[in-house]
Image 1 (cartoon, rainbow, N blue to C red):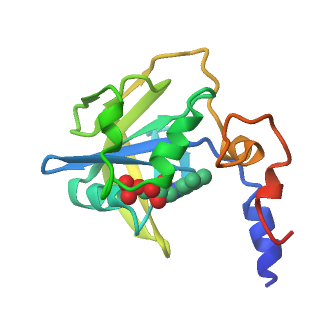
Image 2 (cartoon, protein in one colour; image 1 turned 180 degrees about the vertical axis):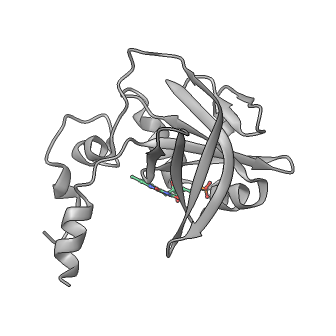
Length: 175
Ligand SMILES: Cc1cc2nc3c(=O)[nH]c(=O)nc-3n(C[C@H](O)[C@H](O)[C@H](O)COP(=O)(O)O)c2cc1C
């Protein structure tokens, strides 16, 4: 298989950027993820994939619960905060308003919405683990907010996420 062709097509799978949060024994954290997808309508379920390197993955592994928050246009700095720093070094939640949800996961007050739930199955996928999540609570706070996709984030440039839209694939080399 041509790895470059595979990468090129994978990069074109478009997903909504989300903040996934979790907590265990008094430690709370969250990270930016692009690997998240609804995977069943009835019953409603979603798949959330977290990298083995992240503290968030470690908290989800031990607690068995998480919350997912779609990131809206205008909240691009959340991608930088949650996607480029680790809770091992920075308390990312300290600068944001949040409450503890019914599962125990942090729920971000200013997110356009959230879904929290329990992990009912896990699968090691390589360098990420997929969590099948059964929602137990959800809320849409801002029906007018437009979720930002990773496609759009790459088009703006990861380090200047508020920049005008460009070619999303110029972020990837080689072409
Ligand atoms: C555009 C982008 C997409 C990302 N997608 C994922 C993802 O799907 N899953 C994941 O676990 N980490 C993803 N990350 C990486 C984590 O957000 C990053 O490693 C974070 O610093 C981990 O923080 P933590 O150690 O506090 O959990 C992504 C980062 C960026 C910038």
